[in-house]
Amino acid sequence: MTALPGFFHRIDHASLASTNDEALRLARAGAGEGTLVTAGRQTGGRGRRGRQWQSPEGNLYASFLLHPGRPLAEAALLSFVAALAVIGAVDRWCPAGDSELSWPNDVHVRGAKISGILLESVALDPDPGIVVGIGVNVAHHPDLAERPTTSLHAFGHAAADRETVLGDVASGLLLWYERWREAGFGPVRDAWLARARGVGAGIVARVGQGELRGTFTDLDESGALVLVTAEGATHRVTAGDVFFEVA
Amino acid sequence: MAETRVQSEITGKVWQIEASIGDSLEEEDAIIILESMKMEIPVVAPRDGTLKEILVGEGDTVQEGQDVAVMET
Image (cartoon, rainbow over all chains, first blue to last red; front, side, top):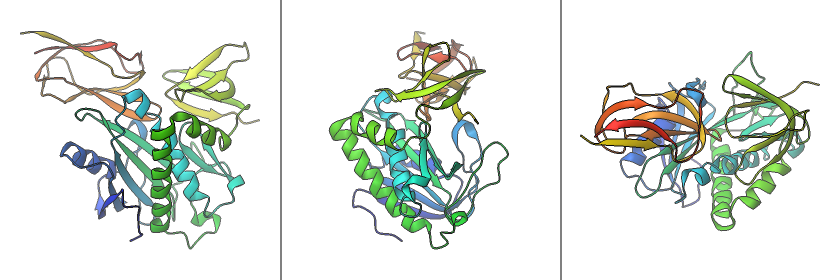
């Protein structure tokens, strides 16, 4: 197993239903910050909104427990911290110009999604804990009708392995987490915008039952995506799915 | 029996209603799951009691501090 920063205490499983579920269970049982749950495969891996996250052997499935000591609205900014950690890990294998961030935390390589991040809060005393669940397609990627996906192996990086990716994700997560705690969202926001896909481009935000179309202009200080419609109206998107319009 | 109003701790969207009116809930049982910035946040029962009313629906936007449910405790 890869060497990790001393901040993390790793518990590895050959197979789990869900690393996030196990990390949440450990959090409720009093596990400390830095607890890291990994699994070789998941039988019930999930993404946002209960969607299945296909989890065969060979990919990375990791859930990190953090105690940021902040209210939930601030803790949600860990979405961007995690995104920077993952894109940093992908940079070892893919030229930086090939990978981009989609709001808030998807990493795409040449337009195809290579990772997923799911944050879940857990009520703890005195402040909520946050489980940061990260899945990276190292060896395999699903064939999805609704969006292109890829893996490191699909890009010809057959030497990429989940342990090396985990080491880079963990180091990057700790780096950006500490930076966020010390300096606030500003440096995280700047770094995220520098790698963001489509600033200035047309996007569609699917929010609830409705849809907003406009230009992606900024990421505000609360982490909301700023969209300006053709009519000049400014909207802040804090939830939902964001897609880039095909030219 | 006292009435307890349950608030959201964050601005976000209601993704899923987890409990039903009349359910007996223990402290920290999830009532509603919110989503904000791709973080899923359970709004939980602050103490043991019975769920009396759910004030929001799936897809609704809720503000930090907004009442989202009422319990009898």
